[in-house]
Amino acid sequence: MEQEKTKKFWGLSQNAFLFGFISMLNDFASELTIRTLPLYLSSVLGVKTEVIGLIEGIADTTSTLLKLISGYLSDFLKKRKALVFFGYALSNLSRPFLFWATSWPVVLLIRFLDRVGKGVRTSPKDALIADSTEPENLGRAFGFNRALDPFGAVLALFLAAALLYWSEANATALTRDIFQKLVLLSAIPGFFVLLLLAFFVREVPPKKDSKSSKPTFSFKGLELRFKKFLLVLILFTLGNSSDAFLILKAKNSGISIVGILVMLGLFNLISVLVSYPAGVISDKIGRLKLIAGGWVVYALLYLAFAVVNTPWGIAVTYILYGAYYGITEGAEKALVADLVPSEKRATAYGLYNAAIGLSALPASLIAGFLWDILSPAYAFYFGSFMALLAVILLPWAIKTN
Image 1 (cartoon, helix red, strand yellow):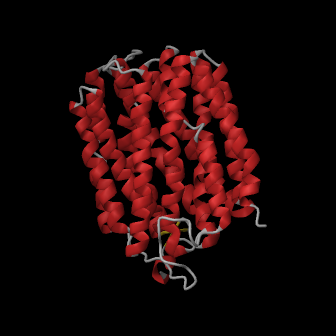
Image 2: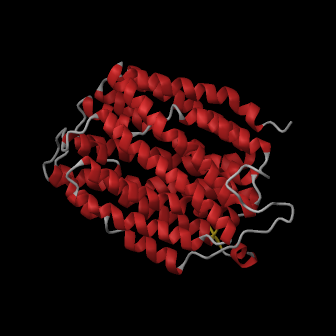
């Protein structure tokens, strides 16, 4: 551990620094396919909105449940790197099979395998970053990783938009030929992800706390504030349906496929610009203010999604939506590390992600139901209301007495 601390890159440990670039490369590959997948399902395969919501909900829930299991295994075995490598390998080997997908059950299977990979790697990765970082720099480390992750998406989406524009594919509908080209392009970065993991990321065993009990799937031995935070997080996530619904709204407003890719690229660029400063600020003023502020931003933007219907209005709102991710994700993960001892961190990150994932399926199903039975606006009204409710309850969760 001491050796790990002596190696600094931009004020970060070697592991925290490298995981930023690993996330960037992996997100480059993922964004070319996953972000355009709802358009492919809708435009090419003719899948209904509620089925798209079901696919996204199952994928997200599967990922999160596995984050819980892999987090427990990582703490039990006191190993992180092998699980992280396996997870990244599975995702980068399964996504290319979307090239041959011609029905939504096949898409569901591939999406499932991709999310299994994410589920296996995420909790051990977050714990490895936290264990490689000094407590006073946790916000900086997670903010840096949260910044480079969407930067890969920026590069991917702008490249895809340029390729589509010059191929005269500037149309509202996504064709199968275009989607297959994006899938092939997305396969390239996976090799470099696995190379960096295999040869440059170091194993850092969790620090032993003699007062801590053995890791379990239960909340036993975890601080009460952590448990209450998870409860509030579940309430927020019930209104945080899949972003696939936002992409579908952009498509239905008449934004072209190139326009959607540019919009997504700018959305991720906003997240890149906000994430690192937000992480540094959270180290100085505390996590609560950052998280509450991010959730307020979410509530306001979802209210805007409910009432705005013009292509330009939707595009601007979606681009600004990137600020919510930049403000909150690094601060939330740093807060988990603040509240949980080192040898239970992977388990805690698994519980944190389980709280999100178990709420993801009902969140997407509720949004799909409101979208089809009432109107798209009601899906966004519901999300805005749940976010504001979570903001009100957050101080209760984090207070020390």
